[in-house]
Image (tube, rainbow, N blue to C red; front, side, top):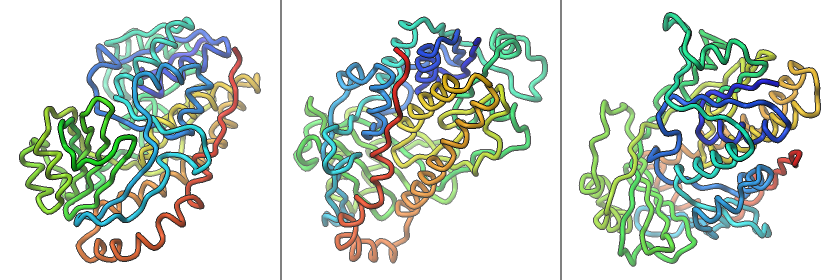
Length: 379
């Protein structure tokens, strides 16, 4: 089976590994010169993502590139603790969530894909429908492939090939800036993810083992800014009423990323018997699960193709398997976004109610997510 993967990020590199493990000939095309590189900031992998990495053979490399996080604390803007739960896992799970830079995750996945014999071609973009002649290397490879995997993210070209009139991403009412600070005792103990719900958005931070503090500010704004110009000093003014975020921003050494957050309506056509979407191209779920769900997709796709020799039937089975799980998570992510864009009255209600209910309902509402087992791949 000649498989072409479009996109060499998390979803694409993981798909290359999984497809090589079932014997496919795999070529990956990436539009950017370096599909890892300094793109994005940090991300967290919950235990469902870690189990997927174990199936792919990359768990130890990824663990070595990041650090484990044990607990998740939720705070009001006034510093009141709203919840304390296990981070990205069920309470009795021996695995611990791992946080690392996105570039390091992509690098580990790419290295394993190449080791297994996948070919990664960088600097080659697939032409989108309506862009004129499609005669580049990626276009020629797609035309002759038995399987085309669209792992090309939120603005997927493969998705447009499948459905030119399909849904388009829209601004989600939030934009984010992420960076690194140092020397902030107020950041709290290590191995802990902290989320503060402020007046104008949410602020996440994690003390890293090297003494730095990794942070991400998510600012609520109904109108998408034409350009995100906020540096650490301006962000400190946005979070002036929240003591810990303000102190962390004041000690910032560098800004790693600034991005608009988007939502995508449900994608009605995710495969056609030869082309199939994975990761954000199919379901940009958010809720800190984007990378983990992409890893799950890669394994589920390869297992479906390995189990069913009829390729259209295999892709249909893969689509059915993933649709319910991704849809349920997308609804969870929407609730999370709403909490971060809540107005002053909703914030007061949250501060009063959340300490009473959050910790008790957390396990019941997340066990379905964290207890998932992706299954094994051929060695």
